[in-house]
Amino acid sequence: MSIRGKVALVTGANRGLGLSIAKALQRGGAHVIALARDPAKAPDMERELALVGDDFETAIADVTDEDAITGVIRGATRLDVVVNNAGIARTKPLLDTSTDELREILDVNVTGAFIVTREAARRMVADGGGHIINIASDAAIRGIPGMAPYVASKHALLGMGRSVSLELRQRGVRVTTLCPGPITTDILGPGTANPDAISPDDLAATVAHIAGLPPTVDIQELLVQPLAQNG
Image (cartoon, rainbow, N blue to C red; front, side):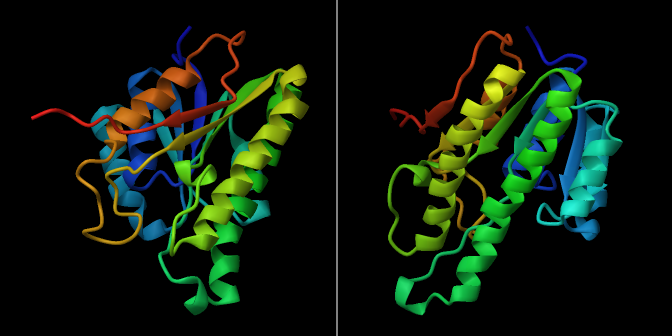
């Protein structure tokens, strides 16, 4: 099996891992709908995707905006793969973290992912099947000091994935939750990338491989960690 000819929606596709995933799916032959929140970043995203090929389109929407997300999904010719990648992270001690800061992270990482998952699942069930891939983190299975809201959001995303997978698999929709360790992106701000972490391109290739698996294979959860290189 492959992703050639499939239609794939990637959220948070304007930079970092999301952009790498969009490119990897493009290279595999999928038509990519690259979704981003900030219209000012759309031209750079389009230029990057155009370097790979012309089989893509872009959409500007906040994943927490139900009407906008519904419009994007209904406007697609069809929807075979959805990668829930949009997310935010913050580092701050618990005693200094406001309730509004907690709500902001949960709104994007959980509520946004829920909206995209629900609307994509509705479309996929109606169309006969599909594959939803949620990008969580190894923070979904462990604690990290100074990142309580982020860790809580990723635990929630993993739990949601487990639940909806049980609901949807008999209706032709697979749900995979990917739990990667540290990635060489600047999600925590400029200059914060760990050089010994997983390359976004390597992780994106993993996502593209999962998306291309036969419909008889159901990977529900996958923990991905960087492998230390000798020398």
